Every structure is written in structure tokens, then in C-alpha cells.
Image (cartoon, rainbow, N blue to C red; front, side):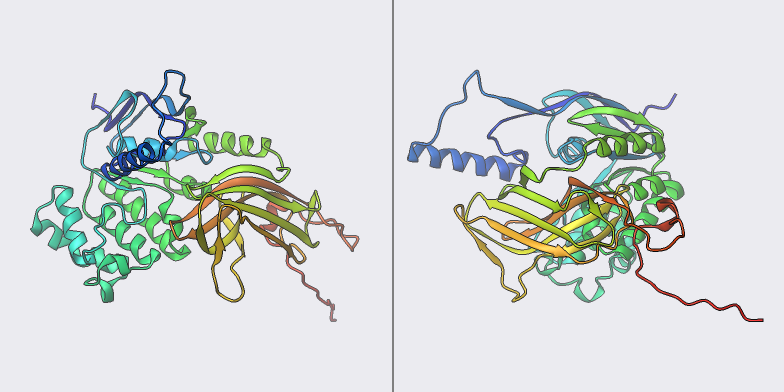
Length: 415
């Protein structure tokens, strides 16, 4: 019997509270050392003690992946999905357990993973190919196909540090998908691209897996994409495997757990990356009713002086399909300038909410000086049905889609 292409046995990853969770690369370790030296000189350093608290980002993770399989990995924020992919990609070491990968692996975990900022797009293609062990002639053979897929022909000789986030993602995915790895690892990074490019990527991953028999590990909050692409799913919850098996079975369990969370009271202590904490995200009245005005309020507290250039409330269906956004950028185009004692509070109104009754997930997009990132599944909102003004019984929500159209009509029977 052929061995699995990936074998995971008892994987666990532990972090000490107060330690940066992303402290996995050489750069992170150097930054930590410099920070520690600074704390020693300022008198703020304390040695680690036996009683220090630890958190397990992953615990007792065991599963196999067969060659040619497309495996989905789902779970809420903080479930350990990205940590698991970093271990499989050998970016970080597990605290316990073992992961065996039998094949050449290309990972796309963050925008521009493996890219050198000062090199051009052309140079980065050859650099990434060399890292994957490909010869120069093999890379040249794929070069035109990569550039065409990424749609960056005009900018291929421009340093990638000048690329937009969309260009970055397109080229990074094109490189990872076309340079013939046995295993392709893709995190939620594709959400940065537009809808047309996301569909293009899904088609390419299907081609890679079904046409060429390569293995794909795919992390996404978009359950429709998971259903389309994957044959099996691992459902992670709070760092452990809650389920592994058929796609619809695990998606149903995941959505059931999300629904069980209920509607948030609006009070939070939710980390938005390393710079902000979300203290409030609330919709009122409760319950929210389709077709009526809805008020919203959020409060973000910064941990240091910084600026927010772009801020959006993201609304998703329970299947992870983005329904729409509420754009919270300043009308004058200037950024929000924040400091530790200067939190950001925003209050607003959605006029005549056009959503069909049902459950929706709420997230945030934050673009600040330090990073830009989507934060999924922060809270839930249940939308109730509006009262019908006619004698007709409304169609069931399952048949009506997501948006409620405010339409009028006249009818006439001739003859």
C-alpha cells in the first residue's frame, strides 16, 4: 500500500503568553532578541518562571493526506489552521509530534510568501523556482504561462515592493501553482484578490489536482469554495481536530457550531492583529429586521501610535460568501490617526437593510501602517423577516437568495 504524501501524528504547538505568536522565522527571533535587550536596559525584562502560562495553538493533531487529494481545512479564527500549515510548510517547528511530507511543497500562506521585495517579478519567479529545486530551463518553459495567468506583463520587470496587493497575490499564486510542486498549500490569502481572480484560482487548483494528480491543502472561510474544490475536510476547533471526513458533514457541523454562538451583545476583547483590540461591534435594534434601518457601533483601541487607512465591516452568509461591505473610510480621504489613549469609535446607520432573513457572519478589514488583513467570524447577526404588506405568503428564504429587492409592478391580463 502506498504511503500517504502527508502524515501528521500527534502535532502540538505551544506558545508562552506574552510571546508574539508569529515568532517563528529567523527575522522574528532576531526581533525578539533585540526587544529583550531593550527591556533589560530599561528594567522591564523579567526571566521566564516555572509558573508562566502557556497556550496550545494546536494539540493532538493526527491525520493523513493521500497523493492527489484536495483536503479542506476549516474552523473559526484562532482554531489553529494557519499554525498547522506553517508546520507542514516547515516555517515553524511543532512543540510535540511529527509531520512527514513526502514531496516538493509550495505554500501560499501570506501575500508574497517567499518573494524578495527588492527583486523584480521576473527575478522572483526564477528565485522561487530555484527554491523548489527546478532547473532554469524548466522555469523558462513555464515563465510565459505564469506571467499570463498573473496578468502582470507590464510590471514583470518592476520590483515587487511597488506592486499592489492584488498584483502581489496574482503573481504569488501563479508561481506556486505553475512551478509543479507535488503539494500546493493555500491559505485564505486568495481573499485579497477580486472575484474573477478567485474563480480563476479555484479553476487552476482543480486542474492541478484532477488533471495532474497533485495534492492541495486549502484553508478558507468560504464554504462554497470548500464544497467546490475539496473531497474531504478537517474541522479544527480551539486547536484540536473536532471532525474529519466528508465535506458536507464537516461543513454542517461547523455551521451548526457557528449558529450556536448566537448574536453577540457587542462587547469584545478581540485582537485585530498585533496593533488593535476590538472592544465593541454592535448592531441594533435586536433583533435586526429585514427592510428596516439598522444602527451599528464599533470601538477599536490601538496598542500604540498608528494610522488606519482603510476600514470596512464585512458581511458574509453562513457559507462564507461575502454579501457586502460597509465602507468606514473617512470621507475626506485622510487616515484615522490613533494613539494608545485615543480609541476610534464609529456610529452609523444602514438604511432599509436589504438582506433576506437568516443568519450572517460579521468580520472586519483593517489596513493600517503595519499590515492589511481580513478578520473573519468576529460575531453573528440574525436578520428577522419583515411583515408583508400583501396577502401573499413570502417565498421561503432558501429560494430567495440573499438580497431583498424593493420592487413594484403592475399586472394586466389581456383578451
